[in-house]
Image (cartoon, rainbow, N blue to C red; front, side, top):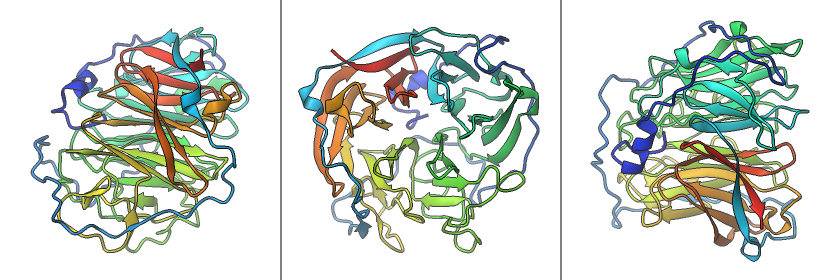
Amino acid sequence: MLRRVVIPAVLLLLLTACSADTEGTATVDPTLGDGTSAPTTEPSSATTEAEDGTPSATPTDDVPATPTTTPDPTPDEPATVADPGSVDLVLEEIARLSAPIAMAVRPGDDTLWVAERAGRVVPVQPDGTVGEAILDISGDTTTGSERGLLGLTWSADGDTLYLSYTDTDGANVLAAVPVSDGVLRADDRRALLTVPQPASNHNGGDLQLGPDGYLWWALGDGGAADDRFGNGQRPDTLLGTMLRIDPDGGDPYGIPADNPWVDGGEGAPEVWAYGLRNPWRFAFDTVTDTVWIADVGQNSVEEIDRVGVAEAGLNYGWPHREGDEPFDGGQADGPTVEPVHTYTHGRGCSITGGRVYRGNDIDALRGAYLYTDFCDGRIFALVVDADGSVVEDVDTGMSLSAPVAFGEGADGALYVLSLDGPIHEVTAR
């Protein structure tokens, strides 16, 4: 899910989470059933070559650096800078599920909707009360290697649940499940977009409803190692990209008019950005109109990017760059995004992206971006100033095993999910 399978910590992801088929009620009633098929978009470089986690390229200091670009500063950045080092933060376990891997909230509801990797969607109340699953697609997905139910989000009106998962053939699927009369109509589940994956790792799969009302979907480069399938620097393929589609704008979806390659040409119409290796969690900060992307490195560098939501067509550099270092000796045709922050594998090996805290309960944390590493487990708080420059990177003192995602409650509270089962809330002592 997060990194090459040769990393020992990631072997946890090879454990299949067990979930019984459950029918029950929550805010939305469950109705289980099969979805219909949808058009498949075939990445132009897809291949059946077996993946190999052994890297053949090593970063070198004698390779000329690819020109980079730093995103424009955000003029609306609040004047008050977070001070996470001044507060004693702790993780409070509120619930425990079977391999929780993603979380979303439905508009008008404070329920935490949690995806279990094996395929269930389970409601959890902020007080920790766990309800019965409202959906179970475990028969339509697989948890082998880095696969499974990987993401979920709700439409702005709460009438559609969107899912991101790998199907039994290993392809990434973006599907929609409608809600009618308060009932989740699982029998009407339909796939909006299916993207074949040539290998079983680097699926990415994070899914978010953007502040623009469009669906944003992050996909890895196709897997194996060293960008073997050549997708990183190709905006005309859907792998190694951030996709942005209008789920209500066509059949099965529409293309936003301001997508950089809306008419095709050098890039696929769905592509918003490219040059990503394995984006494992991204998040929007609506206060600063920015999107934060955590991209998993290969040999030595983990990367965090922060750009304006409206900045289209950006190249994040992979495989010519790994984080802020040269990787394969190649040069991009134009500038690449300069990460806002990186760290080396002396501290971890597979970044888990987080969220900017905008809640009201922890003043000193407001505006800080919390993130962690699947292999290390410590949670850090990254603080940037009005120009987008890093002020500090604070070890919060919180840690957990196998962290795979952060979630945000309706009230702005932050939660951290562990693939081992616990769901924690970030609180102040």
